[in-house]
Every structure is written in C-alpha cells, then in structure tokens.
Length: 177
Image (tube, rainbow, N blue to C red):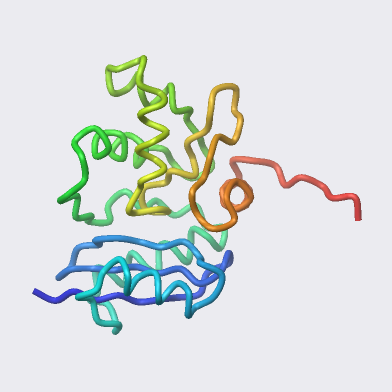
C-alpha cells in the first residue's frame, strides 16, 4: 500500500493532496506557503512520502488546478477514502459533492436533503471538519440567507468568498481603490 502526498500551485496558492494507492485520503487548502502546506500534510499523514501521484490522483490535482483557475470543473468522480469519517459527515459530504461549480446550498438545504431538517448546525460542523476541501466543496455551503457562514481554512471566509467568485457563484466585490 503506497501512501504519498504532493503540493501544487493553484490560483489561490499552494494546495496539497495525499493519497493511498489510487484514492485521495485528504486535501489541503493553502497554508500560506509551500513549506507550510507540506508541513501540514506531513503532520496529518506521517506515513506519506512526497512524490508524483499515480494517474488517477494526478487527474484530481489537475481538476483542482483547473477549478481554482476558473474552469467549471466537476470533481464529483474523484475517489475518496471515507474511512474514519463519521456516517453523518460522510452523508453531508456526499450531498455537498452534488453542488455544481457556480452554485451554492445552505446548511439547512443539506440538512433537509439528508432528511434531518433540524440538523443545519451539525451540517456546519461536518463541513468544518471536511478532510477533502475543494473535492468536497464545503466552500459552496452557506449559512441561511446566503450569508457566508464559517470557513476553517487559512484565510477564513475571505478564502471561501474568493473560491466562490472564481467559480462564478458570487460577484466580485469592488474595492474602494
């Protein structure tokens, strides 16, 4: 069984991805630098060795780069290892994976699709523990009324908004300068 990781440049910074055999076991949004992203992956996956990914995993990397570069890339077919992920979270992630680029749902929408309409807060907590950001597009899940909600990645809600602007789900907000 081969466990590896790679770091790669995207339009929002250096991201990372870890795999076991041909299945993704985790992803990382930018941590501020390639060294920090690499260190995060090493801490999270201590048995992983940095190297070139196998072809199916390289396709996932290429898809992430394309998506963050503005291409409406659907990553729903990327194989993910859900072992160790609580059943509720997995179900919430499966619903989130159906949200196409450029679209959003609310935590409440996902709760209703799970048949548990009172579980919006639990959906939010699941998204905050997402081991596969970008591939499981937790950035496309908003709070009630289209509010940002939280975002646990470096850069917080600003990173979430930037990703949604790239995908065309939010208009780019003008600045004063």
